[in-house]
Length: 115
Image (cartoon, rainbow, N blue to C red; front, top):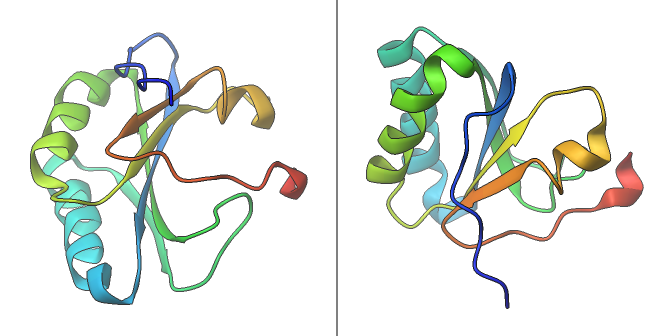
């Protein structure tokens, strides 16, 4: 398996998707809400179902290039064993979730048929 690329701040807007299951729901919810409070970011719903291309439960954090260099290392340091997808938000869903995608932790399979 390929080693994931280190996240690079090269776009204007980003999403982070924090993946979790029943056992890690509280950890993920706390992580997302702490990130929102600490960095003044918009946090999406904590989805206890698969949404869009995400094949695990997830919570979305919306951020931009101004927050990237502080948020991404903070997520890495505080995510525990959770997987986090960091991707650009350019409007090209396929490229955003492949070419412009970075992982903290293990990569989670995505369902590209959802696009």
